[in-house]
Length: 195
Image (cartoon, rainbow, N blue to C red):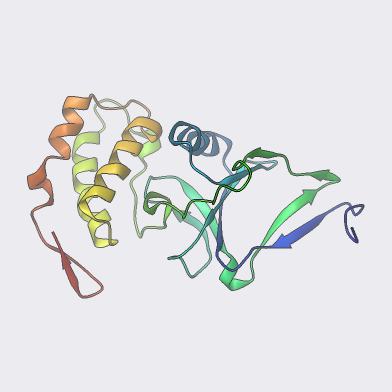
């Protein structure tokens, strides 16, 4: 009530909340398509440049800017445990809530494929003949080195193929990339071996 008539205001994120801020319209559309198709329980605000996606958080403990997410999109990350905030009204207009949970439904925890990785190829600009198959195959190792399980790797690569690549691979090609022996080499993450 004290601030509702002001031109702009923000709110502090709850300690267990994470905000994925995608400032690129096209990239935010891609993530919105995933949210809708998977019916994720999150909140999505439209912004002047893109969207803010809010989830529960139990694994990310630091903020970052212009970071690569596992699915190949670029975002700023804000976490409530670091007293981050979300702009709720900007330039005299409250931000439109495009997507939200119903009633007493709990919000989902941030999916692993939305977490920051050290490196992700420029999947958005890869088309036929650009080595997509090899890049996706090589990316399995990168995901594993970021603590992804075999199932998390498969889910991430399927999402990249369907929503992020300019031209998706055929299912038969994806099956070859995600075959079991692609995961046979052990990967070490935080001192533990993953197969």
